[in-house]
Structures are given as C-alpha cells and as structure tokens.
Length: 188
Image (tube, rainbow, N blue to C red; front, side, top):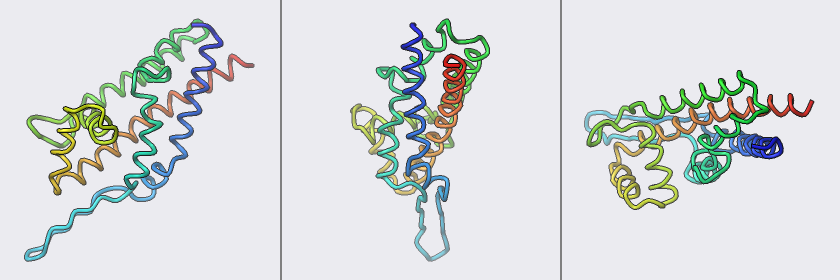
C-alpha cells in the first residue's frame, strides 16, 4: 500500500473516530446509562432503560458502521492492510494486531442472555445493527423483533448493545491514537 493511501486512510479513521467520540450518544451514555428495575408485591414491575435515546443511537451507528462493515476502507478488518504497510513500525503493527485480537475475543464472548443458547456479544451487536437499526438482513430482523417483543428482556438487551458499542469504541479510539502517532512520525 502506498504511503499516500496509508495517510489518507488513517486520516479518515481519525476523523470518523473523533465524530463518534464527540457524539450525543457518547455524551448521554457517559452521564447516565443503565437499566432501572423496580418490583414490589402488589405493584407493577417497572423496567426502564436510561441513557442514549433511539435518535442518539441511530446517529452513532451511522458512523460506527464504517468500522465494522468490510466494504469500508477504514473497517477494522481492512485496516490490517494499512498496518502491514512498509511505513508501519513493528511495534505499531503489534499494537494494532493485539487490539484487534482482544476486540475479537471480547465480541466472541458470551452475554448474560440465553435465548436458544448463549448469545455472543458479536451476535447481539449484529442483530441490533443489521436487524434493528438498518433492517438489511431479514433473519436478523426477525430475531431483533423477537427480542424487542419481550418487554422485560428488551431494555436489558438494549443496554448490553450500548455497552458493546462503548467497548468497540474504546478499541477504535486506541487504534485512532496509533494512527495519529504514525502520521506524526511520517509527517515529521
């Protein structure tokens, strides 16, 4: 990969990461996010999710998809080619690979949900992204609708989705900082 293309891709990665980090989604989630659960004998059970609203989530996901869809040049998978470039130092490449491997291990881990088996974080994220928010995949849409049809389970799953997005954003931010360090070194 040519140096010009590496610089262009890393610059775009930084730009899109900063957009995510400055989003209303992040601001709302950092202030107060979670699920309130209240139950008393003789009283209705109340379950309510706190944090980013649907509009915040949808706006965040619009940019977030750049990092997880492989048809984007700044997807975490495609960025591997950038970090294989000749201008990348061994420690920078190792930092990227370790971050990506740790993220994949996290996403392949289990949530607290058991619905026809253990629900992995990656599955939950993909069902929300491609079944709930973009409706691009008919099978995922069906699963999403089933999950959201359970009014007890839905707020907890929505909250878990927000937690997963934040964990992925943490890795994206780490890689962003690696890109910034490379660009400073190359442009010095």
